[in-house]
Image 1 (tube, helix red, strand yellow):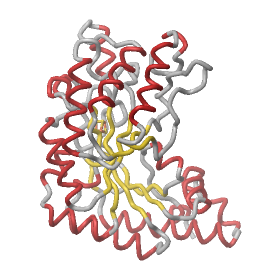
Image 2: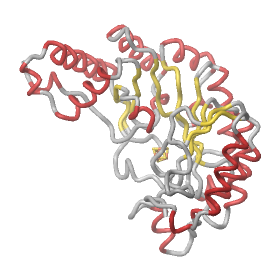
Image 3: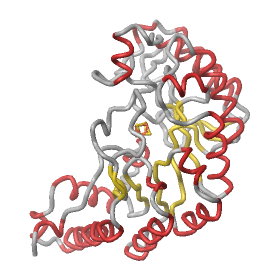
Length: 331
Ligand code: SF4
């Protein structure tokens, strides 16, 4: 048998919880359909591509073969590339329950093609309980609710959306390519179709100039959507990224650890949602008075509204800690 039978494509990123839960990674598209957000370096210079259904099905077949040789203890295992082996063995150890579709916007696939892949995936691995994907709000808006329901019924159950901000000035500044209204419409539509919805918010994305409006309007948009999960992923400035150049040219002033905590304080104060607020990304590196992580790095997070005052107390504690002690790649 040839080596390529034991190979499948793996994209560069997935949400933190999909890594922690050792989700199987299945690439349905390559790179990003938008690729212009100034803070995001992941697909720089790479063309977007929707993969052929047959190509993705071949990947599913390869995953099945890798799973079989791992189960049998066959020497063929030596022919499996390390990254594929690692993904499949991690997934097997975690119970083969969850799958994440890569890359950045699988929902952009023609509905029937995505449904065909989901059905093939589920019939190949009946143990699968949850399939998730990144999705852009403007893509969700463009799909009919009936199409979204068809995709949901075929097994894609959770969408991870990069809201980043609910402020139109900030969204324009960072070239998100989506308005606050589109975020609201997309979020509501996803929920109407029955998806579990994770919305990512990015403290620091408005810099010093838009800090307060960024926080207030992000809370407003989240209140309209009422997502299942709100996941906090602070701005990280990658050297060489467009936002890095904006900083060098004096067009963007990075705010301090305390200023970002003030944003979280405003957002949490203003939120009127029935959601879980998660600090499950390693860039949430604020410290408490003992020097440990300020927020629990938990995939299920804090419950809102029940734990609102607990989160606000933690924010106050973080604000009392000297700014230089908030370690990590953030600042
Ligand atoms: S849409 Fe997502 S993946 Fe694409 S450039 Fe923006 S942040 Fe990066």
